[in-house]
Image (cartoon, rainbow, N blue to C red):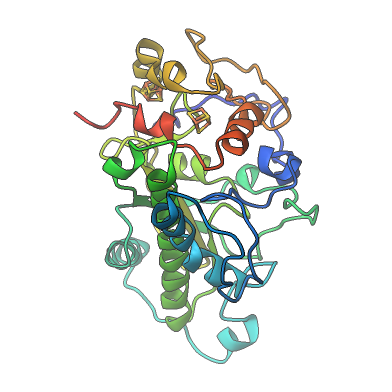
Length: 326
Ligand code: SF4
Ligand code: SF4
């Protein structure tokens, strides 16, 4: 079994507290896609009280693209949506696949039809589950959800290359909405087969280490997952489940060597938030960097300050990355 393409320090690593993320520390639950302005309650589309300025269609698209994500996530309970309930499940026998391999092949094919461009499976390493959510509530996975189906949704490079600006924000928002539709649909599929599951976007557990464990890629200098086929131009999501599956293995990779020789994201970052150090290390910049993981630490608060100043999200470190293009 190959070693995963990351190094951890077992003496210092512990579960990450989502209150430490730059978004949570800034009092923001999620990034703003499109310029901030008065908005209605989460479940209705409010007429704007002020215009959006010269870029009105582009800014409206950036906000509209995230709408499905907001609606679907607000329909799930805070503790997640591990369904069907234990009672429901006891009332019926789950569909029996011929083997975990057979189940995995089926789930991957369905996930791709539901919109995933990459799918991998891993046993859940409890280290990657948040200790607390951004509101301070302890996080624990419902018992028995031992497997994660980790999925990537492709983003359009042409749109992302227009970062920082509304077209890139719109593509990010579309990615979030696609993640929400994909995870909720796959979770429903598992429920209909009689298995419990929990759809998850950025909540509950860190997606990047789960994606690495599931063989989707490795982490780059820009702090994002670099995949062979799409580079960092993807969004990640996962569904936890108790359906017995066959885990994939971490992909052997050369991302560290590639990033050490490249550095294009650090040069392009308008906030100077990405390290230009020659090699990764266990050093951290702030509490938003998880301790005990060897990597290039990103200054997430500098990054977020740029978003605030610029008025839209930024994907310049995705746009600048050549990984996966050849
Ligand atoms: S999102 Fe923009 S500001 Fe943040 S690290 Fe990437 S390039 Fe820098
Ligand atoms: S731009 Fe270069 S250094 Fe940065 S993540 Fe991509 S490959 Fe690595």
